[in-house]
Image (cartoon, rainbow over the protein chains, first blue to last red):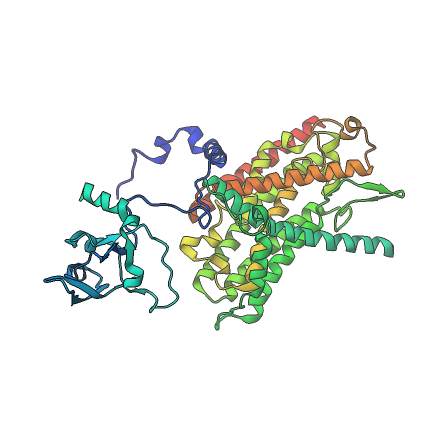
Length: 166
Length: 348
């Protein structure tokens, strides 16, 4: 390798920059200024963050007055890249209509990609704002219908977001 | 020395050692708070008001932790290293006079472990050199490559920077003409603070003190990204706590020594006679309290500077560290000694 004679550190820096101390003083001044700026910390358990409608939290099933919207077509289960959703269909009394007898999402597998929501023809499964998911065991992490069904009133913001942007 | 004097000194020593360790524990909290502020965060605020009991919670946690020793480690030396580390940093405190002499019944007392020790500065230099043993031994006895690297780096670094530190001190010793820290501070309160005569020496001492206490930007012995935790990687429980505490105690000791050597120690107002201005006799109790507060203010201001520097500057590379120590700081320290010597020769 040839000796480098141009653009060396000695050429790039002025004398005052090369003795470092004034530059260090500048840096210290900067950090001192930062100390008195407003803080960004959110005091979490007391002060919670409320996400926007665009937020993809825990997937939930939409519940109307007369039961769930889901018709158990199984598309969500089919599209799920993490194989987290299991649906078992059953017939209703009405002609050519089905409902999910069993609908389970394994929250340990779910990756919150939102494909289930995107593929759903009935707008029956949507992503909620719920981001505080804690389980004590693996069994607890499998959410059945009783945990998944959420009244439609609570999901309005997400449904509007989907209609506007999807 | 009579028995009463001995008891007084022992009681003082007991109080001072405990206060110092508590102060070192609180410096961990201070470090976290300042780090948080610099990064626009709040910092610990859950344990007690304003996070004030965080230090105690940390210490209790460390006591309750399991003491894990690696199977291949040399158990005896593994145990000895933190003891040396903390012992040395406590010994450095022995020579620091925290208050001006106070007149109680015709005898002068000072809040210190070794009253009027006339080799104070030498003792400080000696003990900081011994401090290397704790770190080097911790690294070596862990039988872990990262720890060993940390220990080796620390030894090399401390030996290199000790020279410049000693030479920086020679400057002030030449001017004040004493090694006794009490005389040092008395000289400064009678004349002027030595930082005004030796500003260059002060900067040299500050830089070398950063290197001696293994603080950022010279914290290579424990450079987290390269060496995991450096010499204390294989320590857990209170042994780790002692190494950690020793580190902070060293910072406090360096700050106290800088306050005593350069910033006039317990002298509250530079250039002027404090006792005359405040209207108290020089060895009365109010003067002692003012002096003590002044000393601690200076010491903790310097501790803040240490923390502030840590959270502002990136770490040096190892070759940069050695170049700075041997090629820049040592010649500058020698030049400082020569110039100071000439100055003292011509002005006296």
